[in-house]
Length: 142
Ligand code: 9L3
Ligand code: MG
Image: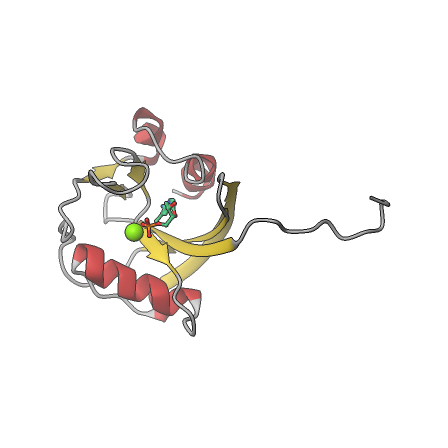
């Protein structure tokens, strides 16, 4: 392939949106992927797939409601960075937002365990490969 050719994308691109929910003490919420899901047992920043027709913020507000039972709004979501990772079957592109203002107390609506963690302790929890590189952005910010 000549250097000027655009490389072919052979795997589908999946857009997932994730959130660092931050509490009043500066701790971040991570959730454990339940049994039966891919990457079960790993700790992640909550979120999920962006559905067709959704913008990422809408998808994140929906996912946070479905998974954790909390409410927030677009003006409370600050984009921080992107993660990307090439899985065997797809490329994952995952913007990470920071949310410090939300309503309700997060609960694991899908049976997932939750933990509020200081950013400098996030390394203690095994994470999916897309999430791990996000940690330094949070330790810098918080
Ligand atoms: N994923 C990775 N890190 C995250 C999230 C929310 C999701 N913080 C990956 C896991 C799956 C894919 O994105 O491969 C879709 O997520 P889900 O719909 O299975 O939660
Ligand atoms: Mg999810």
